[in-house]
Length: 585
Ligand SMILES: Nc1ncnc2c1ncn2[C@@H]1O[C@H](COP(=O)(O)OP(=O)(O)OP(=O)(O)O)[C@@H](O)[C@H]1O
Image (cartoon, rainbow, N blue to C red; front, side, top):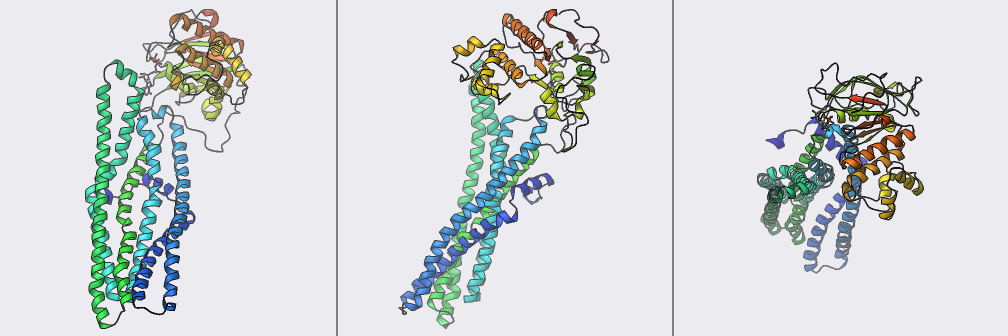
């Protein structure tokens, strides 16, 4: 059985991270215990008081109990409130640590180590599964501790009044716990373990549905995809219903056993009353206290159920990040290690070289063959390299290795320093990548640009937009507050490309790589965009690498690189740095 297995080491590490340390957990647990004890004491004192009052003793004999009832009633609510504050505060703080822990393990994988990860499922792991972990302290550990301590103290208390009644209470509590836990597990264990993965599947299908809506509408596949979402939703609902049914059955079993415990107390208590070994008020306590104790102990079977869900979420979180990142991804220098070369603020080697690749190759995670290989090129400040090659020849792969999304073999030097000896941050501050479909945030134009340099003034932002030919567009749209829409849906492909260019200029990368910057632009405007990119870069003495299948005039190009996958391995992509301005395409 799956539940009987111990969680594996990675799941245990996630669970350990989710459980607040003792100093934080103890105040909430103690307050919760005081609240539960107040509940039981309130019922015991009330039962004693009402029965004793019926005997008409002098009021003096009742005053302590009257004060007790008030104190326990107030204490129960007050301790419960304080418990909620303390235990939720501890759990939420812990969640922050869990989230930061997961993000810091995910970031080194992004973006190329997450290619095979379903984004909707990843989102539910980061949101719902992490949220589920708060239940470890709140709904698993604390209720079990409270239930166990309350049960033991109540059995001791009742045993002091009448040992046989104490034994009856202990027996019914044990039976109640075992029967309700087994019943709950039989009805809902499988569903509870399935809820987190089913939630992930639903998130995934929903995200796919929303993201691909235009394609689904165009191909008449909306109904089919909607059915897929409905099916995932129905499976999740079935599992949730099974969980609710199990909770209902558990509550019914516990109520029945609480009543049985009361009857048991009366069965052993009435003869004791007849023999005069206990009084009427004590009998009332023996008969009624089990009701309050079962109220508290009844949370234990639900805690076992919560444990199944917490464990399933912890397993999913542990599995969302591989133990060892794929070898194809770059590794960061060890923390605190000085970079083996000086970070190049002006990334120019003494001989004037900005960037040099010698026999460079790179592979995608899990691939058996390198996607690009044998690339040799040397660029100086202000050089403009145009890379071309057939589809699949490794142009995007080259762009990704240049910004260190992928690791490389061979030599890749930046300002004379081997790139793998520099912190990733330094490489990415030196080389900027403008991707084929540049991502625009659903924000104003201003925010999309400030993202590159948050200290820029409005004047600098407008100047950057003017520089990339967007001045009239900007005034038509009403200035920097204009929205660009979700993923740039309110701007054209060419405008998005220009905003991305402005962003790269503002970020002030000494080297900028453009991956098919004109891919989504009609031919005439595409040529104009390419021209602008290369001439602006020339004016600003930046080094520019443009991946493009479109012809680029010789006058704008200083180097060309052909990545022809049809060529033999040793000759592919080799560029002779002495041969400047090779024939135009
Ligand atoms: N994320 C990825 N995971 C695994 N393999 C990939 C990934 N992206 C690309 N590849 C593979 O790497 C090889 C090179 O792809 P790449 O995208 O670099 O080519 P490209 O020259 O940019 O093509 P295109 O002109 O069509 O954009 C291809 O065989 C491709 O299937």
